[in-house]
Length: 98
Image (cartoon, rainbow, N blue to C red; front, side):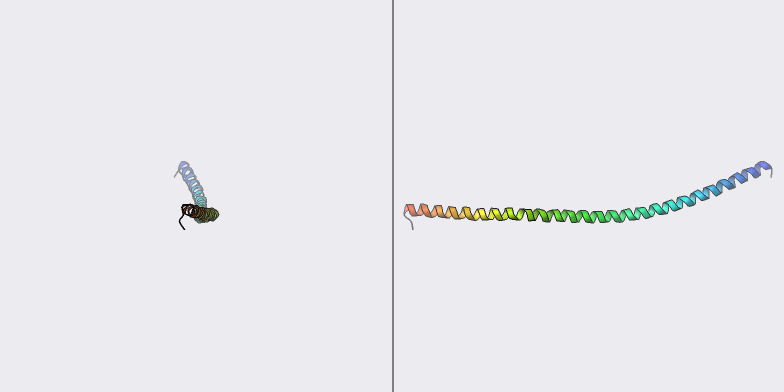
């Protein structure tokens, strides 16, 4: 072996050590990214549950808002029915039917 071969082997050995160190660093980063991915997946699941709950609350709130309107319409319907009955009774009375 001459000096050039020894120099080349030394460079390759140093490059190998550097690459090994870099690979170790990448392994750590990949592990951290994996943990982040798991956490994001859990957050996504929780957001989906919250979204479903919000939709259900909106639906319930809409039902609650519509109840007074429905009741009002029902009362108006009763009043109109009573007025129609009174008018029909007056017409029958004028005609002579009792």
